Amino acid sequence: MTGTFSLPASRTEVVLEEIRRGILTRELVPGQPLVEAELAARLGVSKTPVREALKVLSNSGLVTFSPYKGASVVTVDAELAKSVYDVRTVLEPEAVRRTVERRDPELLEDAAEALKEASAAIADKDQAALSLLNRRFHRALYSGCGNPLLVSILDDLKDRAALISVVGWEANPSWKKEWTEHKAVLAAAKKGDAEGAAALLKDHIGGFLERVLKAIG
Image (tube, rainbow, N blue to C red; front, side, top):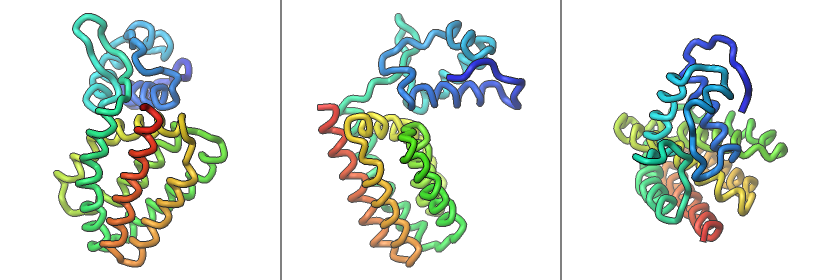
């Protein structure tokens, strides 16, 4: 995590992204207490934006609150991984199928750009960047489905999915495999093959879950 910030447009947003990145890089490890005063001192802000950021991260699934211990980093276990990926397996391929049918080239270009940027992140073994690019790629493909509620449900899983990805990659850094599968999904989408893109995505999500479950036991 970095040091003091210059005055940002929104301190809470900046603090939020710093804590999120700290969790996804494993600088903030699973189960680690997140003490407002300590985080505020490290980030050069008051406790208020830290408190607000922790609330947001709790809602997104990266932080948990205990009545006695306060905030801490979420620990990924098999139950969490199965729950998140069960929802994704059911909903995301259908959302992507609908997106492809709507034929929005701008969304496909954003997905393609995420794939390009991932090449550098893979070379650098930057897990946090890869997690963010991974969810950017997936969101580009499902966000054009035409159903705002479906998009919102999938958006709510983004942070949890990113954390699960980091756990899986720590045990088995299969980034190149995931991005090869991404390329196949995008190729089908660009051809207008909605059913093919959905099927490839379903296999992609299911295959990664299997690897994660092996990694965490």
